Amino acid sequence: MVKTCHFCHGHDDDYQEANLKRCAGCRKVYYCSTACQKYDWVCHIFDCKPRRPINTADYLALAVRQNLLPEHPQTCEDYGFNRAFQPEDKSKLLGLYIGLMKVIEIPPKTIHNWRVSGVLVDEIKAAFYKIPEGGRGGYFPWFLQNEHIVALAGQPLPDETLHDQGDAAVVRAWRFTGGSEKESAAEIRAVMARKPEEEQKCHWLYVLLLSRWHPSPDLELWIDFGFASCTSQEEEMELGARYQRLITMCTFKEFCDAFRDRRLLDLFRSKGLEVNDHNQLRDLLQGEGSWRKSVWHLKQAIVQEDSTKQEAHITRSVVADYGFMNCRNESEKRQLKRVYKAFFDSPKGDPLALHEAAIKGNIHGYISTVVQGLKDPKFQRLMKNLYPLPDL
Picture (tube, rainbow, N blue to C red):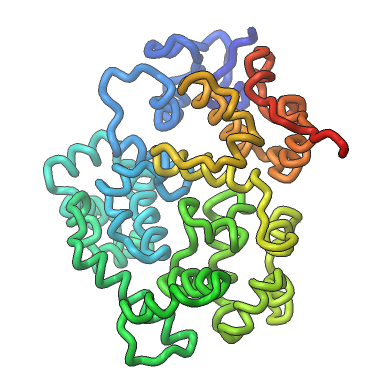
């Protein structure tokens, strides 16, 4: 095997293969310089054998490096993301930490020590105040107005706070769609429970959109309104923004009718709103009837489990169609999930192509073209299903 730097892969201007040194922790990868090893440590720590326990500041540093909101639950608790209720506030909080860790270059270890010592807010201020005011960016002024988000991080939200916010969201959506201002949240919920299923789904989508949220993978709305077709958080947020714009340009009845008749993409276009109506989104928003291909529920379970780090429910159709019925133990089940996660994470992973492979009884043959390392006959056994069905 040809050795190369795990970070720059030999593309650095000063790269010399003779300078390669093996990582002392895992003994598996090489680096051409201390600078490459130091920069890559933010990511490599999760695959190495660090001398200290990995903490939530390490997960925060990884999110900063990837420019993505953290998904690790405890990290979201420790650094305030669970208290930033609006998506734009979450983005600004991430921007604050990007400035702190990438621009000011405060290492994760220091940020961890600040947090456990109870001085995180004060030290963030001190770090930014050392920079001339014109160079502090726009996220620090936002932080000064919202420092409670970080100051209260890690403390449980009071039940009444969650209850009040949920009720307010329900009432807001009810009035936005033309409901009376007299009904309480409990009365609105009772009325909605008697509405047709399609109208209920539209109402709950409005509840989320008017609170500046979009459906998460643990909700069936994530599939119903096409978010399952997205390949990243950014795509989901962009689609959510399009929906937020759409509901200000149409009536609730127009929206419900379009959803029921599978014409949401037509409604977007009729209002002059562009959406990336690729095959996957069209399949979800324009497919026949209310039936959904089981591949979308497979993706939902995999994405949900990856984001929450908790085992997700797998529907019976997924169990039958995608091989989970073949798993002899929990270890095989986890291995199968990892394969599907690698598939959905890959730019080549096409859920509709996977569906076609499933109904032809060729999951292993197709998925092997996307995911490497599936030569073990065990994977052929795990990916067998009842298809193709015999002709009647």
